[in-house]
Length: 386
Image (cartoon, rainbow, N blue to C red):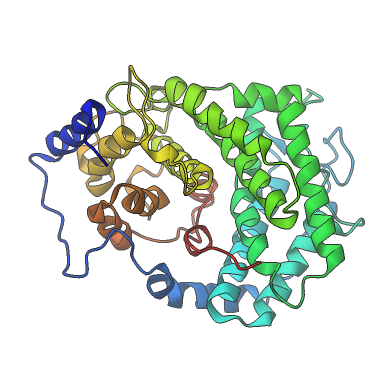
């Protein structure tokens, strides 16, 4: 691609930010397109075998007397020492297990993994006795309020990876027509709520990771519906592509490539990386062979290339972080941020992929898991065969 002023500046920024830092050790096998299946093989199989033994847990089995909704309604409370978090924890666990099982199925083609993943999907989205209501009216409620907060939309960001897994499972022998119709119906209903509700609209318009969470989910769910129903209208994806280019970049990324609205939080490092990962996933999902949103920059400002250049040195060496350290778990970061893997291919930057390979792929800390929603990169870099 021809070098223009913005690309030159972004590349220059990478060089300047890297000065004085230890050189990254790059092996002879350095590549911007690493073999994710080979790298993750043992981790995926180990997790798949573990989760074959875990039974699905539904919201119906976890009632809360303080919830103003029904048994099928997702309910959580804003963080406090006595907050009700059982629904949030259950959805997180379901998302981790379902995507891990789908990834194991993609890797091994063993139907047992697909069958177990479908058990979870049916529990949450298909079976009338246990399915979750496709809305987040009561997420992050502050009692005695009878409605949740816009910040609650982030509670379901983990479903973006679940949505990525479903097209792979659709090729298995265990997914039935009823499964396909039920899943399509649930995600279509949830997408309608995300698109039209006042609460979701307030989340959409935030200039930080909450806005990114809304965008990632709506993009992922639009793509899922299109994969399950090729006759569906793709106008929604086109609108989201324009929103990313015209609204998201301008609202979130400043001239030096940072996310200013994350830097003012109590966990600026973690939330900056969380936002970077979500924006990278959005770029991945919105790009086509005819148009790459990775390369889109504002005429008067930066884009994703500048953000990656800015944060790469801080991922490589946490000690160079020039801002306030996180209030919690600063020393437990970074993890194996998927933004590095996705951007390595998009920008032909093998050093991004080399760093990605060296970082911890998982964490057992629930609070860190909440801001690390992409754990199975195989599902994101592989094309399903429908």
